[in-house]
Length: 373
Ligand code: MRU
Image 1 (cartoon, rainbow, N blue to C red):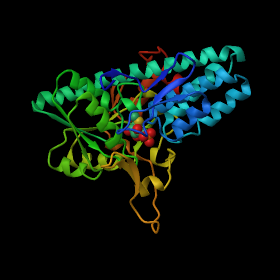
Image 2 (cartoon, helix red, strand yellow; image 1 turned 30 degrees about the vertical axis):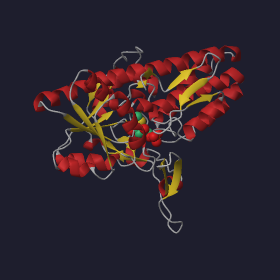
Image 3 (cartoon, helix red, strand yellow; image 1 turned 45 degrees about the horizontal axis):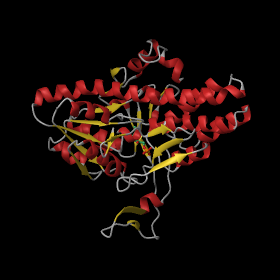
Image 4 (tube, protein in one colour; image 1 turned 60 degrees about the horizontal axis):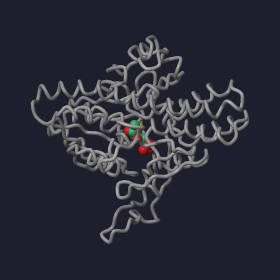
């Protein structure tokens, strides 16, 4: 994707053995890149959300292992690195998936072989993410095209949080079909939930859609139901941070309410799901998925650009009130119209999802179950 006309990925290797990322905490008002030199930098970037979004978190963690192996590649260092990185954020399963893939590859190797192998694997994981998202884009495009052919007018899509290219290495998950449809000339308009408290919608989704020239409107998180009641939304497409083997979808807080409103209004509710976001070990999303609880200040304060050109943080609620900050919620499978995966559109149920593990993956050739279990 392009930033001010220049093509970027969200994470890339430097020529001198480091990694660079876009600091997403500075968007939309400042475009700043940050250099990660060691595993602690990678862990900090994930924990403090300089990088965020399930797929990008996984890729950053893989590079964190590679950075670490360049410095210390003993068994103890490998274990300590993996154990530390995996705890950086709890909900997105891609983090654990990427770490376990790195650990499985590196553990049997001699220490002096690990750095080269780790960099190669991190780079493969990054490239696979791009290929997966491109493919999600192609499959999602068919859905948007069908709606356009029926309506023959602008297709309105509502999305929540940021599941665009900033949440991945490139293309995005929920926004990959949007970009694919936009490229083919289908007239689109995107309703962008602001996504309190971190405002990934207002700060990131709106910014990247604007960079790409896609028509969009930012709305407060509570507006979606009203828009659906008035026929102003043809479909919802969201991303996901973890999906159970039964199709329950964990995504940014507020997703569940959008799914309920969509269900009540007969609006299709799609989830763009890269298969590394599947957690085969879980059956019941509400009971089993760990929900990250973040600090109260994210609710109590808000930051923005002031008229004098300075970015400031201001207090929204007084010190007399406490706040709670649940970062994710779970949408039960019954509310999900379909999962748009890199392997096609799937029903959100155990039978359909099980089929994934029985057929070879188009990119890796492996049975998916072996890869992610
Ligand atoms: O807390 P974040 O910003 O890391 O949240 C993750 C997300 O970006 C969303 O939940 C997203 O919709 C799924 S990741 C493509």
